[in-house]
Image (cartoon, rainbow, N blue to C red; front, side, top):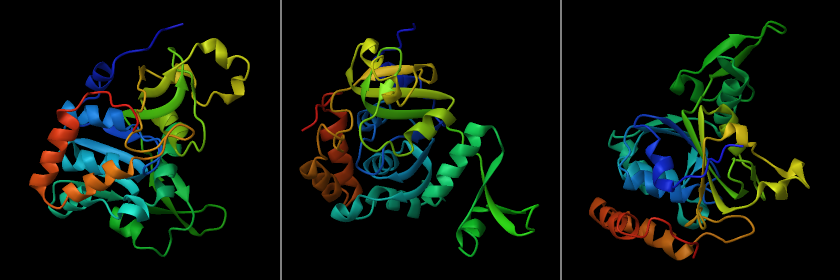
Length: 275
């Protein structure tokens, strides 16, 4: 078996500028935020981010100049903190291209990539402004003659997913909701897995059905305790309300935001434990 364990710095160094990058988790829940911090430290540029519902990860990568485009159905900090200020600012000022989706159209695009087809039909979008705004095409259903919107395949160059347990070969367990992580892993050309704890793969043998991600799909495994912080990770810790409130407050202007990033991310320890 191939040992795929590596460091966070080495794993993220393999993400090229300009990559289509899928980020696991959902809003503030089990996102690969330690990996996102490392993307910021390495000053990646030109990334197109893919996520059904982003929050801190998408906002931070946009505000720090790492992202050039975002394909997402929603970007915001839930009702507790409101919308995503850096994302909004960068889109409004033309530095980030918002490739607007519905959450389900992101899913449809990932499924098309998995199945090796150029597009995936989707229900429920006819009558909205989104197909015209994004150029999503309509084809004729050969069985009924009705029109159906089709979403082009969305194939990430890299997917980064955070899990609770993984072994060195890339087999992984996810406790709680899996969100779109498995779709991202299957659709992406390369996969980076960050994990709260490394375990002996023998522990998976008693319940192989509990393994959500198979090692043959994974390129790199990084042990990252607290790797979803400042978000939460099911069964281990909740999101850090104090840090997130400070982050939102720092977004009142660009200078405050840059100071926050410098002090709390660039000059901080590369591996932060959950608070």
